[in-house]
Length: 263
Image 1 (tube, rainbow, N blue to C red):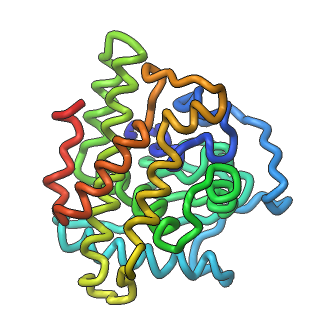
Image 2 (image 1 turned 135 degrees about the vertical axis):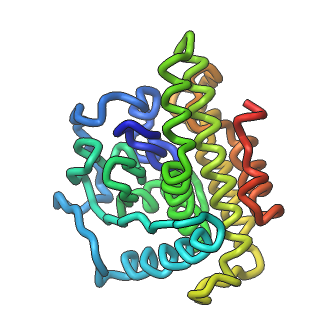
């Protein structure tokens, strides 16, 4: 979201710290202590062209996503992309792995925690397929698009004027679902992008839908507490996330991603 608030919190902040998910939206400068057996003991924020396999994958997908949006958004400017593990400084405060992947509007940067995908697959039952990982990246780029066209700023203002936290959360959900829809738009146009490096294979969309279902608010809440509290949703239910990802893919057009009129 705009105004320096980290957007996305990944595709579900619970991916690395289930309890942390329920306080999504806290001041990003507040440090959370996170211990994960899957993460390397390093504090790293790195940009450029990483040499590891995950980094190269991110480079290919990012280039393709940028190509798609450059054709759809006037004067599109690509975001920076930073890969990190455990923690890194950002234009929105200190970013930690408990937040999962996120987008910072202040520095127009997508931050991707390399441990997130491992957690997503091993703890949440999401798909380990490459398209599922690409969906995570495309979702965060969707927040960049929202920032460029002014949607994030409008949502932040609406949240500030909301009469209750539940009402404010509804705007957050709409923003996240639109980013899911944008990810679907990217997927539908990926093969035709000028980079020409990403083409969907049979079953790819199903893997993305499996991941969207695994990281819905209701699914994550049920896993963490055994209960579902819709008033605390910030990303949308599993059904909503699947629905909007499909809508973006089937329409191929960002104009079909008006999640706010259905809020």
